[in-house]
Image 1 (cartoon, rainbow over the protein chains, first blue to last red):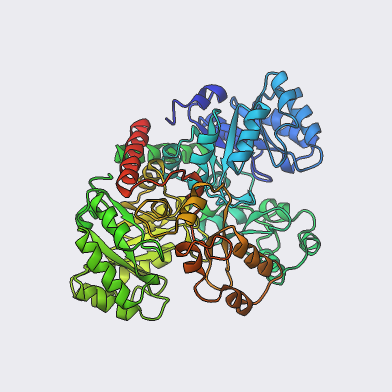
Image 2: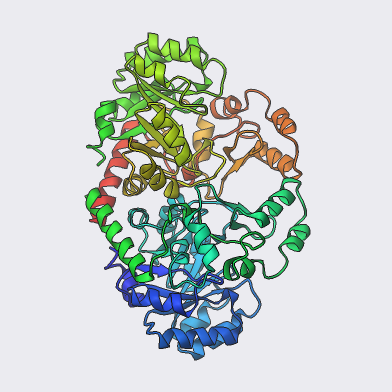
Length: 313
Length: 313
């Protein structure tokens, strides 16, 4: 399955593994390394101005990226400009999220691109299919970063999405080991999207402090917060405690927004301020205990996956 | 795996499937049917006075239950008396939950019983192993009814618990189809505990209204509520809305307790008041679309499981 999914053909990858596009983490280095290791590498455009996105795309190709795409969150301003830049750089694979799949899919399909949209319910998956998407990422409650309001977990979500649509389903949320990849396939997924595991690799642009916090994290060290704004899974730190304090007294969305301010995620994830930064990460962080190269990481995932499959059959 | 797990030997079952002990749902009829279908049948003692538990145990045996156990939530008064009744009736398999595994495990082990405790974190699983439990149920966030405070999902929890303890792990939460059983095995579980799927069977004592509400439910129709009391996953109805209203203005635990009152779960699940009752159910309800006999249900699960495994290998 890992080597023969319909998505390997679509993405021209050896493995049906997508390295998630993540703010402040997945630039040219990570995406190129993921591509060279046999996966689809995604550049996380959410934290990039168009000019920076252009630089990363040029650099990723210079580093030898072949299976390369961009993740464009549609909730930020400038998504259209980012798409234009990516098209000019010859990008053919677009992962869009946090917005309507109808907005850009027809235009991108008309230009011969592959379009995948992220969903967190079967209803949203049907909308993606209707909009013409080639595949969907179905992302469960355990995933890091922004998250659906219905809190449906990967275990429950994947079979429901697989049954709801005919296009291939990429499972995301809680997948950080080969056993979890095997489980995602058992649930009916055609591929997996992996975020958190790739944050703690040599080539990710996450700050060393953040990588070290991940490999020392405990189960229960993340929680879905700020549900009155946009739900986001955060790692516990001083900033988290301030959010928790506001939420425990039902503070308004405005108060939460004021606390969040601007640049919190960059402060934590890129600049390494573990106290005051916003640390977006998935529940699966607690099982990550090393910071390997992406190549080593992918080899470990594939080996564990094969062990899990052998044990099952 | 489904027919050859270490737990089939321990529980003397054909399949490594445990029918969960659930309040107001799993009496003698359901447990006996589950046992006869090749699973371990559990009587949910949480909603029974000792005298009623005795009646159900006698009836289950009269109905031909062989692999029979009881689930005893330790958070209610009277757990000790329930255990005494069960021991007098010759019960040898005890599933305990919602309390310390140290409380009754040594006494039950000294009497030659098999003891399994429910946990929702790897740390709790280690405590169960230290207390002498034979196995643990590791229950994820998506499960119905009472739930852990760390909100760790089945996908993330199972591999972490499997790595943390040497005793066998029974996966629970989000398992209502053969694909999900296969996924649980891929994650490293030795068996599965299934609740919600068995609520909507002919032999469950849930009210017909509740069964019908389940087979007409939508994704996102449950939510984990009352976190300031004991977190519990509820189906959305009028009572749910009242809880939500209180929680949206940060009402005190006392206010929530006053709204909850007494007998809410019985009112909904057994008496069939879909407006005012407390409806405890798992996220997986949205994929359940029929009310088969337990035998048919188990045959479907096994067939789907085998299809999933064949597809994987």
